[in-house]
Amino acid sequence: MKHAVLQPVIAVALAAALTGCWFSDRVEEFGGPTMGSTYSVKYVHTDATPDVDKVRAETEAILAEVDQQMSTYRDDSLISQFNKAPAGSCMKLPEGMLELVRSGSKLSDDSNGAFDLTLEPLLNLWGFGPQARVEKVPSAEQIAEARRHIGHQHLRIDEQSLCKDVDIQLDLNSIAAGYTVDRIISRLRELGISSYLVEATGELKAAGKKPDGEPWRIAIEAPRDDERVSQKILQLDGYGISTSGDYRNYFEENGVRYSHTIDPLTGAPITHKLASVTVANESTQLADGLSTLLMVLGPERGMAYAKQANIAAFFVTHEGKAFVTHSSPAFEQLFAAGEEQ
Image 1 (cartoon, rainbow, N blue to C red):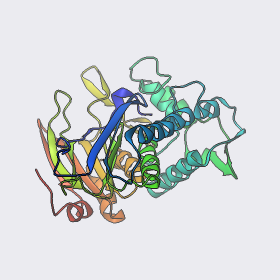
Image 2 (image 1 turned 45 degrees about the vertical axis):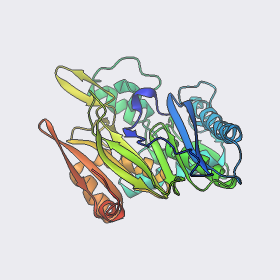
Image 3 (image 1 turned 120 degrees about the horizontal axis):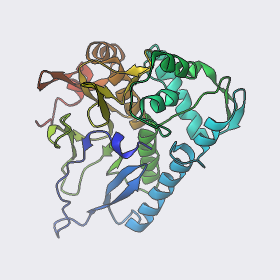
C-alpha cells in the first residue's frame, strides 16, 4: 500500500538464475505493480512444486485481497470505509486487519507512542497522505487540531469488530507490506515451495538456497536521492528485511527539508540525523513496523531501543556530506558470517 514515492530503499540484488543442464531445478520469477509500487517473487521450481502460472495466480489473489482491505488510496477499501465511519461506531473487519491493529498497538505501547497507525490526519496535513492537498508547513493550531484525532487509545477491538471513540483514521501503510510478504510466503510453503525470495514495495524475505547451492542475496541501498548505490550486501535465509528512510519523500520550504516520517509525539516530521534504518526479523511484518519505529526515534534513542529489545538493526546517519553506519549487536551477530561490503 505504500505509495510509489514511499517505496523503501532495499534493492533485490540477485545474480541471474542458473537454468542450465547442470541442475534439474530452476529459478522461476514474476512480478508486477502493486500498492502504488511493485512486487516480485523468485522461487526454486522442482518436480514437486506448481507451475509458475499457478504460483502467480495465488500471489496476485493475496495482493488483490490486501489492496481491497487496506489501501487508503481506494475509496471502496475496507479501511477507507472505516475511516469515513463516525466516532462511536464499530465495523467488522477481517482477522488480518485486526492482527495489524493489535501489532501496531503493541509497538506503540512498547515505544511510548513512537509508532502509531492513526497518523493519517497529520500525514494529510503535511502533504504526505492520501488526502493531501499541498506540501506546506502547517500552523501550530492545525497540528494541535490534527493531533486530537490520533492515538491508539481511541481504538478498541470488540470480538471481530474495530471500534473508535473519536473521529480517527487508520493507516496501515507502515506495516501492511511486511504482512503481505509473510502472507505470500505462507501460501508458497503450502504449495510446497521452500526456497524463495519475495518482495513487495521494498519489504522482502528469503529462505533456502538457489539450485547452485548459493544463498539469496539482497543489497541495502545507500541513502541517496540522486542514484542507487549499494551500501551493504547480505545473505538471507529465513529473515525478513525492511528499510525506512527519509530521503526519497520530502519537501523543502525556506531552505528546510521536511521528511514524510512523522513523529507522533510532536506532530511534525523528524529532525534528527538518521537517514535510514534497516531491520531484520523472522517476521517481515514486525521488521516493517520496527524500521518505522526506529526511524522515528532517531540514531541515539533508536540504537538504545534496538539494544534493549535485541533488534537486528543497521543505522545510516548523516554526517555532513557523508554517511556513517552503525549496527546493533543483534545485527552484527546475525550477519557476521557471509556478509559482503
